[in-house]
Length: 220
Length: 140
Figure 1 (cartoon, chains in turn orange, brown):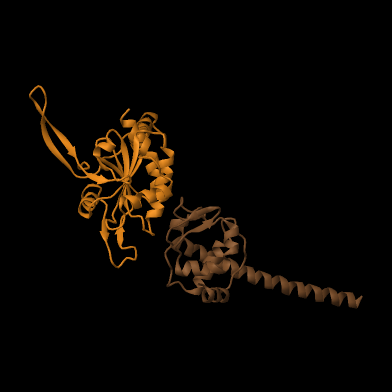
Figure 2: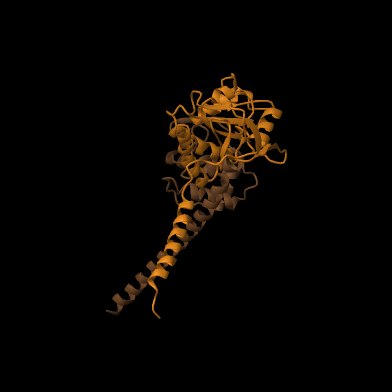
């Protein structure tokens, strides 16, 4: 059978462009996704016309005591991206691993003013600021780049579940007294959630380390 | 000639016996080591780290071979009953609470000890369940 060169050229080009499209769609996105609840709202433009815009879930206002017994609010994280998590100092299960990994990232971004860290304790009975301070020091964290915060149960647990979408609870059957998820949550400068990474999983941590510069690049 | 042959065979047999004994011991140690590693990952690694490096000043490293050697008879007790109060490891003071493993069987403790004392730069060889039982009895 004779091959028709014209016909085949067409077939080849179809295959070529399809695969090109497929491959390029696999490329890494330049921007990280925005997580959480979103709403469509109508906003008025300056010229009187209106358009539809989406409003993303953001971290609400908070006021919590840090390791230096100073109240901090969202202002502390103004114009910063930060990594947040929930833990408690006497935790013997996942917290040490989470903080081992977080400490490695902290060391990496030590001199970068745009990156901060925020750990909330869920042990509202024992983890007073003095305990947090001691813990931070023993972990090798000085200064205020990494904030360890303490607050009333309701406020911290609400923040965890509603804003950072991390499950935390008291559990008398657990020998440590609390159970919680080990997410490290990446928050952007507009208080939006841009990633959640299992703080005990090496691959997830590698992804987080890759995602931080991507998020920082958005603000350049 | 016959004598030489007989003695040669004799020595060969004896060395075979010794050699095979050693390899059974070695085999058992390897078995303990592998099981011990699984136990280590579940019970110890979170704080002491994958390479026994410890965690800041919160958890001491397991790389201080002198400490592990000097405290060998106390390791079983450390694991089973936990540890509280200051200890000095590698010239640094650690003062945190190590949780107990009261439900851990002697055999598991033994396997853990074999793993820890033959990893992270330590090389102490085999340990037996009988020794662990005796260590726990003497542990204060």
